[in-house]
Image (tube, rainbow, N blue to C red; front, side, top):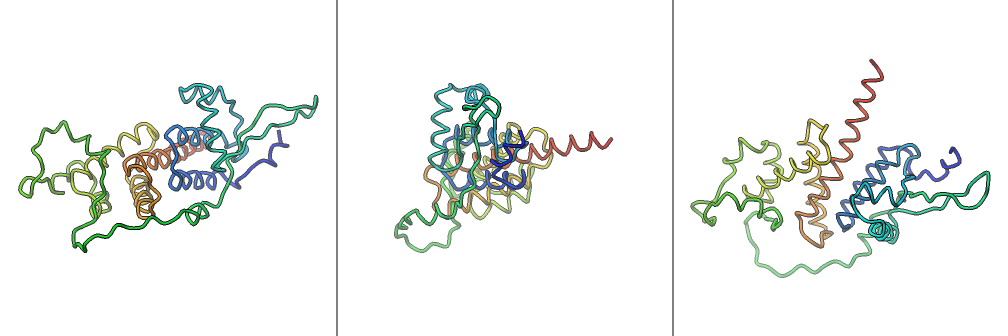
Length: 255
């Protein structure tokens, strides 16, 4: 097994986690590609960056077909995010099982290679910049409130019992009160799904939002901000969940 250490692509799990989060921030991946990358990272700790998961095992864990995983692996390989290597059997010779290696890549090269999108001409405005969070607005449809106008539009005072003040201050320059409320709802949904053991969800949520804002400002988001923010949240919370489990295991061993 020690022969496989030559395939290690990172010096530490922390370094690998940071790279995976960066990939999720920079690259436009499908939800399946994101889930697969997080799955591979979670099973690449013994030899950092190297996963021994078989394709069928990946499919079973993700709840998709064998061929669907193959297509996702192919996309990640084409993006140079991973490599697939067939190992050799030391005793009998010949090929053994394939391994998947998370391959570090200078992601800044991708940004430099992209042609800048010309900004549309627009009149100067003193209003705050507001993102079009269409994916989040649908979450508010069950409130049955009238169409927002200058008189009945909700302000941030309505959020004090529901959304942490620190989160409000971070998102306030970019979204209105309704959107901020929906964003925090997404944070709760993501934390329950990807980080059920994590107690402090505020700081990871703020990091995910700021990373998404940078991606938006850099014109790296080709689809919706909502989908990108959700993907970033899932990546950040997956890492926090792993840290939480490692801390619990360490405390148990020290007893």
